[in-house]
Every structure is written in structure tokens, then in C-alpha cells.
Length: 269
Image 1 (tube, rainbow, N blue to C red):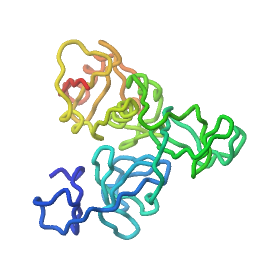
Image 2: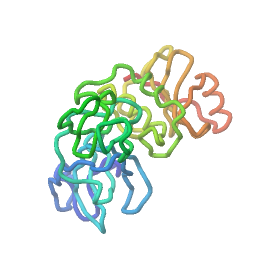
Image 3: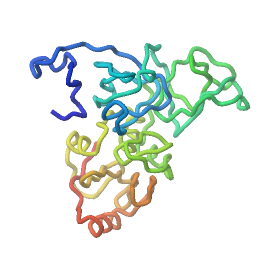
Image 4: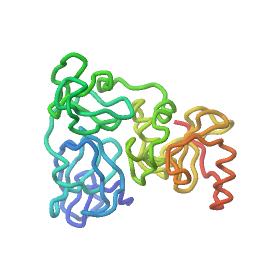
């Protein structure tokens, strides 16, 4: 079983694995992410696998030394979080639908900021004061929010809004993002759930043929890019260490010359 998608530790497993393991089973505890952005780790104090946003559902299955192990609801990815990053929380009503926003200490632009919010973060709006939404964590500009269930329409435009964002392995926000994180975030903002890593994305989607169309995904071993049109792509890449455009033919030639790799998949969501 793929460890990234297997909700089990050496001590205990989620009830969904009944019949597949001899470990004790648990239904776990469904909590929410309480920090604006938090690393999902391979092990307690281990390397980052992905990142989760404020308000996401996370099922806690095991605990160890101030960390919790569990599974993210949005894509099934499993890993460890600091225990302080999860708690009971109210049902979110809105999500951050722009590349980034802030939580403010008061409902005015001059108020000191409390924290930065990434695209995808979910908040519970309890009231409105002028142009600001009030939440349990602070105030957010209403213009940056959309109600849960209302999505953007063009994943390529979402990816383009993150142009210039620095590359970060396992990153899922404007502060730092990797290739599969960019693709997942862009489609998530349009109401489409995709897996978190490029190999999982390629396996989950049907093959496409013919010229590249806007929104198509182009895969190499360990990498994914999104077609802007027939001859241009956008991707978070280690070559420029940022989210950039690149002509498709030039990108294919560059990767073949540098790494000996040809595209391994052409998929359409």
C-alpha cells in the first residue's frame, strides 16, 4: 500500500482498512486545521510532504510526542502534524479565493495583521463590518472570499495568478509551491479535487490525445505542468525556482537535454 494514502501507523489503523491489516482499528477523530498553513510531515519532526490550509478537515488516527498522525479529507494524503495545528472548529462558510489575504485584528485596512492566509484557506464568517468579514480568528476582506461551494471557473487563470511564486518542495501556497501543488490548488479553486503528487495525478486522470488544450496536464517523471494553450505551459519548476511560463517545445527539449526524460503523460481533467 502507498504510505502516502494509507491511514495507519505501526500501532493503529483507520477503520477503512478493516480486512487489510491486523492492527487495531479506530474511526479516528475528525478535527480541523487551526493554523493558516502547516506542513504535513512524513514522520514526527520529519521532512515536509505537503501543506494543509486553515479550516481543512483532518482525521487524527494516532498521537506521538506532541504530534498527530492522520489523513487529510481533501485528497486522502496521510502524515504527521504538530498537535497544536488541529482542534475542534466551526463549520467553514467561506474560502480564500485570491492568491493570498490576511487576517486583521480589526475591520479596517490600517489594523495590524495577525497572519497571512493562503488561497484555499477556509474561514467561518460570523458577521460583516463594512468591507470586512468577521471570523473567530480575526477579520478578512470580504472581497477576498467566496462562499463554500462557489468556485472559480478557469484553473489556468488561477495558476497564472501565482506567477512568480517561489518554488518550494511540497508547498501548497503563494509563499512557496511545487509543480503538483500548483496543479492541485488551481483545480481545487475550481471545485475539482485532484491528488497531491504528480504520479498520483497522472494515474487518476484519463489520457488525452491531439494538440494540447488549455488546462491539459503534461507529465514527466516527477513533474507536471499545465498547458496554457497549444504551445505554452505554466509550471512551478526547479529550473527557475518559481512559477513561470515556458514554451512547451522548449521545455520538452530542455528536460530531454538535461535529464534525458521525455513527457510520460498527457492528461485532461
